[in-house]
Length: 353
Image (tube, rainbow, N blue to C red; front, side, top):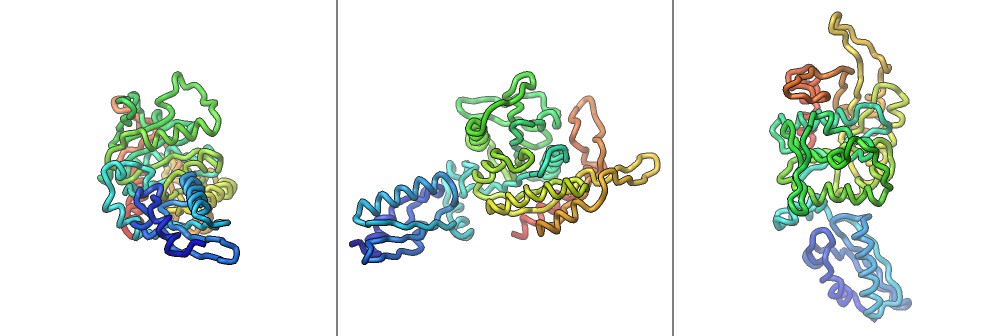
């Protein structure tokens, strides 16, 4: 019959699958309980990220080791290491660990841009928010994760494709933002007809095989709704803050609440709500017309218990043929200034964490 010390010695050499440190080093064995009459061993383990395939592999290994050492039955519970413990290991990360975007040791902040339905301007917001953060001096990356409905390259006026060096993809940079998109790898705007598993591999490549360099923020333009791709991304990321986009229409806000609920259910924080197409303002009279009604954004923010980051009017950027980017607002444009204000609010929230 095993005792607690033997269990701790046996499991202590196992490595946290994300930190690549032993459970002894991370203090990852938080409790051990043994029922002698049933020869049953229960353990609680703390690792960097739970509810992942890596956790499942580790669970199988623990059961194998304990049963191999004589336990008749095994019970395992996992929990996540506290933020202060992860911060300690970030300071000890190797260069390779720090570069792995999906490692909890990486310092990049993920911001997912989500919506409950298509047609609310989620990609337009993603592009302009990324550009606004770059204008404020931040190192920004943008993943066009809307695999079926990719649009970011066209919106930003990108006419180049990424360079591939060996097994590494170099993202395209535009307006100070490093960009990767499925659109770079599809010829002649052909539709993507892949199924879930293939899409998961592409997303994994976007995280692991792209040479992002040093980033402060990585924005993800998620597909609308709560389908497989959005769920895969939520489960891939070590941690993410989410911004939910809606229009003022009550139905759009109702549907958008589902996207916010998915974030909360997958342990991601809702950073705030942006109401797009909030009004149309006449250039001649300055009169505001509320084409899609009013109140959707504030109502959604109240429901998700998150701040309303901003309200963006319906309009179109001023196009410049020499530097064509049909969806990017100039810094001095009134809407460009709104995006800068939203970006400043976001930076303030991160600074207060």
